[in-house]
Length: 443
Image (cartoon, rainbow, N blue to C red; front, side):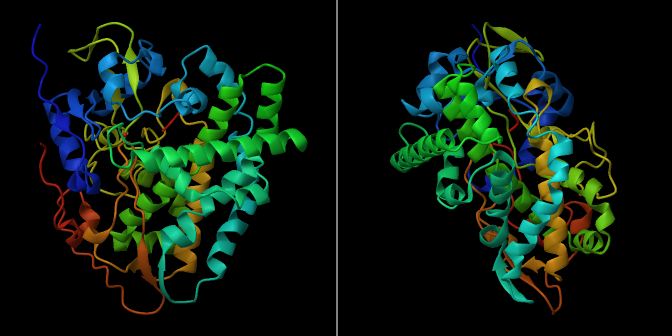
């Protein structure tokens, strides 16, 4: 048996700040690479647009955790029991035909026409969040806006009552940043899980008492009449509450950071809001909140683009690496708001394409238009290298985004950043200290 290649480490502060140089290096080496995550689990990473596109539709690759082998399960950052059995049987970890049946319960709620009809209500919420800010000054756009707006929108779309929405602890969202069994942060992680599970139980009880026509009520009804199991109900609500809003929060922050690094493009977008539909797609391509997909597994040893992958080993697709592939997107490391990148993979592809993609697009467009209009002269209030990127394996975003806005000279600078950005070495002053060499959406 041939010796496995030494894994590439996909973690560390430098990598989290800017993973793109490493992804570029890996793409040049080939489409499949053995990598190691912070928990110590090793996986096979797919890079490059064509390879990613094929892997996302490969019928041999399944997502149910039962496919994982013992080596994966021993170190994988998966939920402990009983939460794993009770909260992890949602769409993200299901295969057909069960995945098909469960997804069907969500499609009407997140249909493009329905969420588009709610756009005026979403706009009202965005405006209200900024009404309390002074005309000029400083603010943390995560605390004041990005962490609140997506949850308010989600609550309206799925039928989460205001009194229960007010009781949701955003700290529970950190369960999408799982830690390994031996990690010192494991007890806090498990405490968040238990708190979120109690919240879901209370929500289900509320919907049984006060049944409506909203999505949450329909899911409870589907459980009560036997179409879905109680664990599937809890898992789908878990997925809605966490995956339905935390990634949008992160995507708003990655889009804003990209624009703040490119002041000329930020100013153009502020002056020409008609560019927003195309700009949203380019910002999704340029730096996606879903950096990597979750695990996929072969049921038996298989060839993946010339690499032999053992059965039950985890296969991960790098959406960010695919979206920066120059063989698909010309000058891919450049933020180009005139680009038409609708073929990007920010929401995945195939049967696990994110069902909330239309809603996420509307939220991102409203967020950017409202922030740029209401906060003129927007610029970072700190140096770029002081931004704290979340330590999640699969996702990208910042925990805080301190900005200055209003009257005054734009101190963000623009010395070449519009030709490249953080990953391209385009001369942007914000790239100091970036990771310069190689050594985790959709459901």
